[in-house]
Length: 123
Length: 153
Image (cartoon, rainbow over all chains, first blue to last red; front, side, top):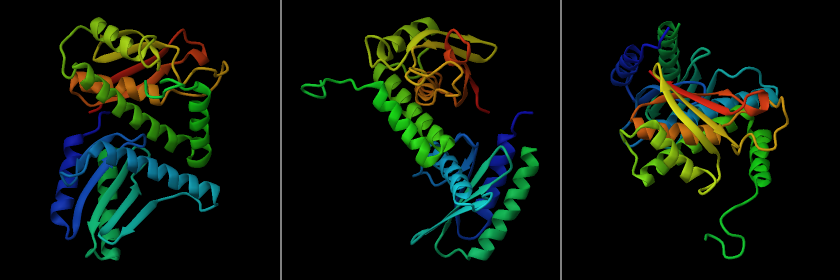
């Protein structure tokens, strides 16, 4: 069944515009192709997609080589904000960008909800 | 020439050693993603340089131009034998790809950078986002390395 890109993009758009301190979100395939994206215009979604998939894959490698088990999430914290990569089923990886004012607990909860919603569309 | 004595070309052995080194450090999947992305970028830039962005030329003419740029008289990345489009699938037959060079029969190695280069070129030519796959391999019984592309979404 083809992926409903318009539906996914709509979900991401609602998430980004309706959640405080979220700056962007993108859903990419495990081999690094963009499926739907709502990112700041300064970011190249092809580069972001390849980076996201490579990073999650690298995380999985770390999990395996360093006996950390299966990887659900990779979390990048910088002085200007957060980047959170989350496994979104077998067919997709979700990247969410948030500014430094975001509350981490709330951010994780919102990402969890978003992931569940996206998984339903991807099924 | 980019180098006075050694010229513009380096050994495939060194390139493949770089790939296997990356695979050991980063894992096969992350390496493949990075190399495919690098290839796509290269392919897009190549098509821009050739002035073929968004062209409506026939696939056989495009194949000739790409073969010239990437093949025996060009950068020697691979030989493009043909490009055929049927049922919304673009099928590119290639030979002597950099990725398959020196691989033993039965090897599981797939084209990454070379697949990406063709992929990026076709995306720039068609103006569409494509999904690509390496569907036949000379190291797994095929006569050619074959790449197939269809619209991503």
